[in-house]
Structures are given as C-alpha cells and as structure tokens.
Length: 454
Image (cartoon, rainbow, N blue to C red):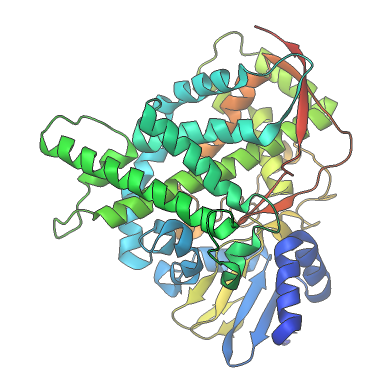
C-alpha cells in the first residue's frame, strides 16, 4: 500500500504563523491542504503522535461506526474548559459521557420539541416586531436573540423576570468577546489570555463569566430548595439534571450542574443563530429559492401545525443546503485513539488524533457537483449517507440539539417570511468569517424591510 500523504509540521515562528492562518482563514487553509494532499493525510510532529485529517466518506464511516471506547474525545477538548468548565458533556468520555447523553436526549426530541414549537413561534414574532418599514437592521443580533430566548426556555423553563433578563444580557455580552476573527484567537492561543482589567478583552470575559456563574449557582440553590420542599413540578432540562442519579444513587454536584448548563446555553443558541443568519442570506440572495419557498409555505394555509412545517420538503432542502455550503463548524472535534485502529487500510497507534473536515467533505465534487453553487435541489434528488453529509457531526458525539436546531430554523423561517418582505442591503457575495469556534456570516450583514404585513 502507498504511504499516507504526510505534512511535516514546522516549529517556532513559522508554525505559529500557519496556525494563525488556519484560525483566520480556515476554509482557504483546508482547500489548499486538500488540493495538495488529497482527502486523507496526516500531519506529523516532532516527539508527538500524528494528526490524521480526512474528508473521505469511507474513512468517516470507519471512524463513526467504531466502538466509542476506541477514542477519547473529551480529553481532546480540554482546551474548552475555560469556557464550559471541566464537567461539561463536551469534556466527558466513556460511561459518564454515555449516561449524560442518555439523560439529556429526551429534552431535545419528541414531546419536548412539540412543547417548545409554540414558544419558538411566539418568541420570533416578539423579537421581529421591532423591524420597521424601509429600515435596515443587522441580522445576527435578532437571530441570536431568538435562539437565546428559546434555549433559556428549554434549559431553565423561564422566559421572563429580572434574573432571566440579566442572564440573557450577560450571555450575549460574554459571547461578543469572540465575535470577530481577531478576538477568536483568544480561544486558540492561551498565551493571549491576559487579564488587564475590565477594559481588556480577557479581563472583561472573566468578569462576565464570574457574574454568570453566581447567577447560575443562585438558581441551583433556589431550585434545590424548591425540590426539597416538594413544590417543584418543572419539566425543563435544569429540573431533569437536578433529579438525575447515577448507578450509586448519587446526584450531580453544583459544579457539574453549572458546567452542563453553561454548555447547553452556549452550544444551544450561538450555532443556531449563525445557521439562521446564513439561511436568510441565501433565501434573499436567490429570488427563485425565495419564490419556491413562499409558494410551499403558502400551500399550508393559515396557522399550520409545527409538524406540517417540519415536513415541508423544499424548506428542509434549503436548510440542508445552507448547512452544507458553509457548515457552522468547519470540522469535528478531534478523536484521540485509545487503542490501535485501521482506517482506510492504514494502521494507526494509540494517541493518534483523528480529525474530520466537514467543510471539505461538503465540497467534494463527486458528491456535490458545482459545490460552491447553492442548489437545494441536491437534497430532493439525492439521499446522502450519514458519512457524506454531517453538519452536526456523527457517531456517539453527534450534536444533541440537532433536531431542535432544525425545528427552530424551519419555524423562524415560516414565521418571518409571510409577515415581511426583506431585501439584502448589498448584492456582494457574502463569505464566512471566524466567530469563536465556528464559522459565521460577517457581523455587518444587514437586511432591510421592504414590506410588513401586520
């Protein structure tokens, strides 16, 4: 067998420059690497295990279908503990990870989705009521407001009150720390995290994080007291976690609860907000897409059931194509081998890192001809396997909230389009930029209200 294509990692200043380039221009970086090394290659480091990068469907199937104990993923995510804490689902592995996922899964599927569908529509209407005729607005803050209100309701079961409003404002401010490519470097280069007081990015981040921590710990205490009194009948995720017991009958500590709640709040709204912003861009940049979508939505008549909206084929295809062309996460989290494994016929030793490029997979010309073109019809004509289309990752680390995210995108679209005629303020093609760990539309992305139906 031929030797696997290999990238020799450099050291010192050159390596740092390449890392910065990868953070600031991730898509160009991936495309250049793919052109040079193909869809399956390794990066070797001096005195360290290699990292394997792939966008090959067969390799992805090998990885996603392997036994979960083949990998450590949480260990590879330790760099996120500054944001989500040491007890986050993202940082867990093995049995603890499996049990936590099993505990959380029902809250993002089935009956729970039905219960929050009305809330999504209500929140969307309330947030968009402020749009004025012939006035332009930045799209992201509104999409983020919708998704944050939804996830606060799903996680905490609250949608009003002083504490709710304070938490909403603080979370928004905290995430603004990483709202552009340069500030995102704080995530990838810990040496940049210097606390020079509240006027420095990192100092401000730490102050906001501490205030959020106090609010959540206060809420944990109040909920525990309510539970002990037997007066709590809540069905939100927070209550579910409070009631959870492991095989030894032990519940989660305050610290574990805090870290899990923070993870759900961040992961549950930031990514969906980016997806929605892209969705509104594509719908309004391609008249034929908007026309077909409006026709499909009109066919439902007034006050359609959420299940009817959820099952619309063209709306589903438009969202699928939105998440294909610019996936919110350019790649999956790294999987670190715990035992020897063969992928694509190549044998790898323990401690090897396996990485999947979602963006490169979604732009394979053999799967998606003219991949840079936005064509929802792809998803009406072809059924892609879970190794060919992976906007939410896969295997035992697939995004827990994927069903909620998709439902939100559909219901927000179905709520906004019949009420507003929107236009882009610029005809120039929009390209993704780095926003924290994700890829997002530029913060400057604006639209204007051309018609408003009350």
